[in-house]
Image 1 (cartoon, rainbow, N blue to C red):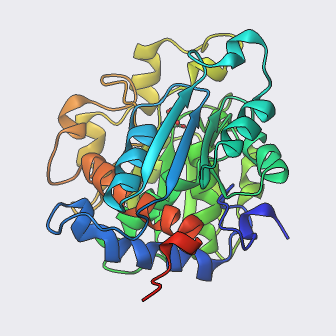
Image 2: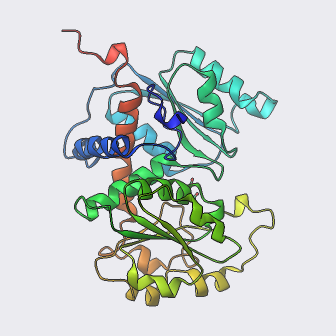
Length: 323
Ligand code: ASP
């Protein structure tokens, strides 16, 4: 059994997370949505809980979103980042995590440039570990919030839909986690981008019942898909600093205004951020309120992360009603 399925409430990846667990997180996120949309007041379900964000790689949305999610459930948070920590003095990631655990926190949310480090930490600690993005491996909460956004847009239906994920797939943990989650729920995924960034071998990552296909021709897939997810080129994970000049990339793989016109009117455009406007997506497309769900992904991501934190630590003794 993979670590994703451990009872403790870890969430290390979507590779191997069964459909029923995946769906129950989406259902729970649905319950929390009015709080995330601020239509209802914050909850105290996790009052007394303490969530540690250990972020050893830069983040805007994910770290802030986990903090907001914890606060909306009544938990407190403590933040540690790579640059201000003793990692810069040579302390290992594992020792850092063990020390933070020893302070009595209830869960660790871990981001690291090294693939597999949240899993390594999870094996050593006795509290739930949530992967907030590890190298090019997985970013499970991003994919869950993407799937949550799609399920809401499609009024519940995921099976049978086709999602195009466009960009630097080979270096993208977002693409991998989405491919795992979407195919587990019966959607098909088309991975689109230049051959150097999207090798044919990626077709094998589909878990079924949905399938994964690879295409190097964005124009040929646009008319047939139910959603488009644009990704940036992950320059920080490429030894050669990205061989394709931005203008060339945009003309072949950017979601320009012209290309967006070829999508069916109801097809949503997604992006996990950070966006490189004018490279993988034109500003007019990113800001098109009828089509772009990019900011909705962010809001719905808070509800999704509330569900993930509740699953991880909602059962702790202080969270039980002792009336
Ligand atoms: N924010 C996402 C991640 O951390 C996507 C990206 O950085 O391009 O993987």
